[in-house]
Image (cartoon, rainbow, N blue to C red; front, side, top):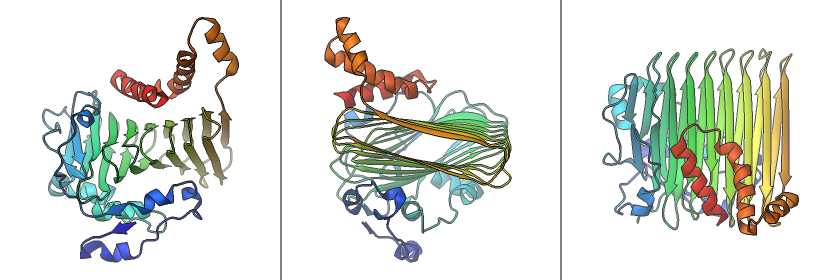
Length: 407
């Protein structure tokens, strides 16, 4: 890995330690792929966006910010006619109009010992999107953030960021789409989420960069009292597709639900790293991730529940179910529990299995071809994650890609 920066960040970059296989959270990562990545300041691409890639952006009506290689594409963005209570800004605009918001929610120090790629994002993620919903407002239409990787002659992995801030009693849906085209490169994204007291956010990540690229995503969330956060991850693309969640339930009675689907083919490695910290009493967390793994692909789920002293009344559940379509595919699941409070209920479970032979046989006896029977069973397994979405356009977008993976 290489990183070149201005003098402002060079001291920070000089102190970086890149992860190795000795680091448990990076044990299954393809370090040869990570070693080929380079990082630097964002540069507007000289390439035109391929029409097929442009068509891959979910056809959601409403406000959106589009970034290409970490640079805002104003032509493809929709920043006008925003509903009451919503501010949707680029980082450049936010630094002029609401500098305190970025200072409080994004430009904070990063722990270099655990956040190497977050530190690189601080150095090179000069632009991004700010979604700010005012107190008591409900935003009915989904807000979309689109991050596109389109390597050019510079060849650096793109870096971008997002800040999502809901004030007390607000509600919204935000969808982050991460797609790409090209034979190399990747993306390094960082999202910070703050859900105020009694606020509710649906947050969706659609990751489908090119099969030769790497995606490194990090999401840090903090929740206030009585807040609700529902996270939906669909981790489908990239030679290496990784998304880290770090959620802190900081206010009493907060609820977080994290659901995910990953579908690997070829030699993909799809990596889910999740930590939920129960830091206040009477909070509830649910983690439910499903993996479909074919050919030589590898799925990783590393899920943690951390119950801090004083977080009495914690209710936490975690599950990870994997469907192997090949005897060469691999599923790695690791639950982590640390409980330092009383009167808590925590449980976890994991399964790894293959397609049900009896179900396949039953469908074949009903005149369904083997290929169609296999597809029906795979889609039935995936639908339990896809159906967690309320938006029909997003459900169709994901279903189409699941079918494409199944070939």
